[in-house]
Image (cartoon, rainbow, N blue to C red; front, side, top):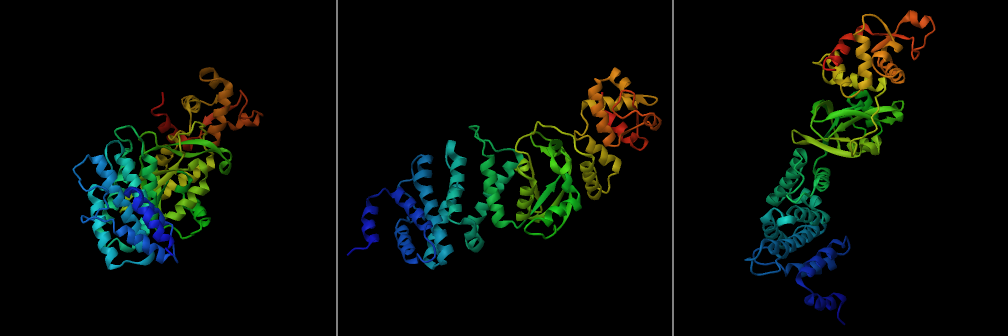
Amino acid sequence: MKSTFEKNSKVQKREPREQRIIRLYQQILQTGKGDEDYRGKLVKELLHLQKIDGSFSLIDDYRCDSDIRVFYVYFPTYYATASLMYVTSLDGMTDELHKVLQKGLAFAQGRHLVGHGFDAIAQQLEAIRIYKDAGLYDWMRVYQDDYAEFSEMIKNIMENYRQRLLTGHVIDDWQVDFSKQFQKKVDEYDAAFISNIWYAAYGSNINSSRFMQYIADCADQTPPVQSRAVRIPYDIYFAYKSRRWNRKGVAFLDDTHEGMSLGRMYLITGSQFADIQKMEGSIYRKKILLGTENGIPIYTFTSPEKRTDMESPDISYLETILQGLKETYQDMSELVLSTYLFRCGVLNDDDMKVLSYIRHSAHGVSLETISEHTIAITRVRKSIKKLISYQLIRQDGQNQEEGHVASSPEAVMYTRKPKRELIDLLLLDYR
């Protein structure tokens, strides 16, 4: 009585060759420990399909259009060699498999996995998926030295994706945006080969004490290996109503255009970064690659889209950031750092109008007078409350003793003397 495999073999001989190679790939990847005999039969069938040149080509004459060559020559080779990667990861490398893989992978490098024409990038991404699903990175950790050229090719592809993400060159000639696909491939590669990453903080996590509270809640509570200053090529802005910060705004990066913000980066593990991003919540779910430092990627995160719910931060939030900035940028004065922070959208146009009028008044000035020369009294009250909370202005003491609350039209306001240099810098370019 013939075995199931022998019966299936007759059917397989009649199936199209391309379907046969894909079927073998799928069947091999479905096997595991304990399936060695069955897997061996599948491998034997696959090895018979290799050509002298190392490929698993479906055609004999390569004098054809490039798209035909990609589909009928290279992709079958990707499927076949990926299958053998999986096998050697499970069962170990034999001399026979080494020779087959050596020739097969040498051939597979012919186009650097790039496809043809309109589908060039998409087909490269698909080729990487074929290898990734077969355990490419686990295999590379064991055999990358033995197959150095192929491993180097994969590394170079990932570096190309990384650079395209950094430069914004993520849209092809047909206006297809590959940013998400590039980021996914880079993330998978980094997770496999890079144990540490730089996390660039630009908000309250600039403050080391604040940041260590996050580390304490990570699965891995190992302190950062080191930290250092980093200039982030985007501006920050404040939005959202955070429960952690008195229902006031928190910092986000505006990655829609170039800018500059002061940050601090910590060398932590990839798992710690993932835990911290998860703790920050869905409002920070967009991961951004900022560059590399000594070959280690620098990542941060922000809102998936620029937020429209602008909200000024609480003074405690600003003070936390300012303390972190002072720790990180010790060569910069507190005045310079405070000016930078307030210029990140802390004060809106109403606030600036009110602050300017108070600063340029010879004496204390009432809310009523401010309103007569600037904006409506209701808006003045809102700005006065904010400016007092930021300790930029104060109410006249005698005026308070007379029973006038800070929101009354008769309340008289002054700028705080220790803050006047800061205020003058903030008003320097204000018209």
